[in-house]
Length: 398
Image (tube, rainbow, N blue to C red):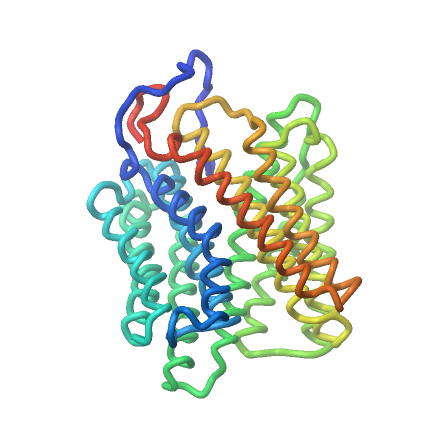
């Protein structure tokens, strides 16, 4: 069975990497860098919108924020990761060089165009990016007959369909609300995290002496199946008590799954415990979503448990680990990595629990959470600039 991530033994790696520019050598390099810079700056862009300094953009306010969090920041990291891991899974090359530059340029165009009045151009760029990424992933997978991972192609196509739905609603082509596309995309990302979390978190945990993460087939099916059922329910869409019960069942399944991975045994290994803490936000999100369906908590609280806690936490954890592993550096978290983890996870705690426990402090919670989030990803962008732009420390290609 192919493993999602192949990380070589870092012994005898030189401390200083040799000179050389390598930003376009593998998918994770440009997209991790772009995503981290965008994550740090996007809150400021949102503030400029509210101040009226960006004129009349095509997307504004909460819709811009949700769109860019999913189809900008998150999708960039997903594509960068899949292009990198996909090369290992298939044994075939994924886009590098000029094709990778073109994809990165398309992503940048999507970020710029949504801040202009040119709605159709923004729609084309944002739909084209996941479609092009799906093609870039499909070519090596199909050539290698890597059927186990075909569904990642389907998930990229799902993201393309979701962002298309958002833009068609925004342009007035369809009467369906754009928020359906946002929710479907959230469900798709949750499913990606559930699948990849189930592959890599137990594997990384079991590399720690004394740890023994366990996987139960029936529980895997319950967690993944209920996540997929939620996606289908949102396509219908389904609301009220049936959806609340489904979300509650899924929360219990994911929580039990997570507990079997023995997260407490990773407390001395930051590169692993950050993934456990981030995954824990998935059952928190699902439980809060069930409560939100019953009208007992604000839906935005459940959404931010997923986006800031689970997505933000897993992304910062995987961006550090895979960047180190795929550039031939030791798999060890230093002060920079731990600071990034704590800043992003603290942002999640504040954004979710302060409004939940003290609703009157919502504005302060948003400001505080945004500052921590921006700080965490800015620190990553600065600290990992040489890691992402220089050739591998061991001199190997990639």
